[in-house]
Amino acid sequence: MGVRGPVPHPAKVQRLKGNPGKRALTVPAPQQPGTPIMPASLGPVGITLWEELIAELSNRRTLVAGDRRILEATCLAYEHLMTASATIAEKGSVYESDTANGTMIRPRPECQLRSDAFRRYVKCLDALGLTPNSRMRLQILQVPDRSAEEQALDEFFPPDIYGRT
Image (cartoon, rainbow, N blue to C red; front, side, top):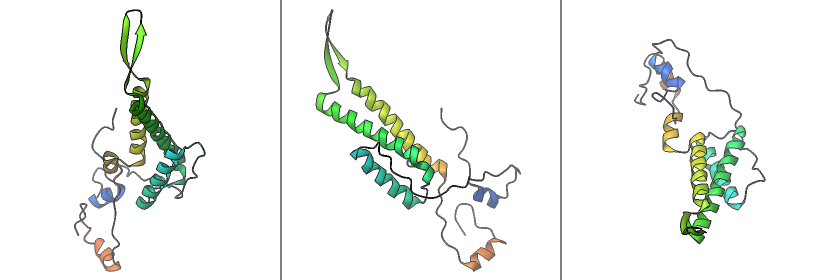
């Protein structure tokens, strides 16, 4: 089941609006920035993805040392996805099975494994904020640097919540 209701606004936007409902503002928990240590359980495909994810999350400035487990789960799911896909490409998506009633064509077990690995992979990417939907939900905003004069004027004339000044 998905997240219900509209996408919540960040606390900064709520403060600019004036918080008319007087509800408590959501304050993000403090996070210790840093690069997590790569686990030894990853294969070559997982190591390559790990390095790509670390670079992407570092560029977004959302990388936290505590993200090691979700990054590991993402890389392992991707490895399983690639392994199952390679087997399906090599042997096909179905196989023949002899039964008492004759020969049956059945789907290869790797098809279910690939489907499960893909679902886990996308779920992990979603948790890391690397899908279009999750980026909308996380509201990662790039705020340009403002001069001291503009910041002083903000006290009397707050900027519009949509970025117009």
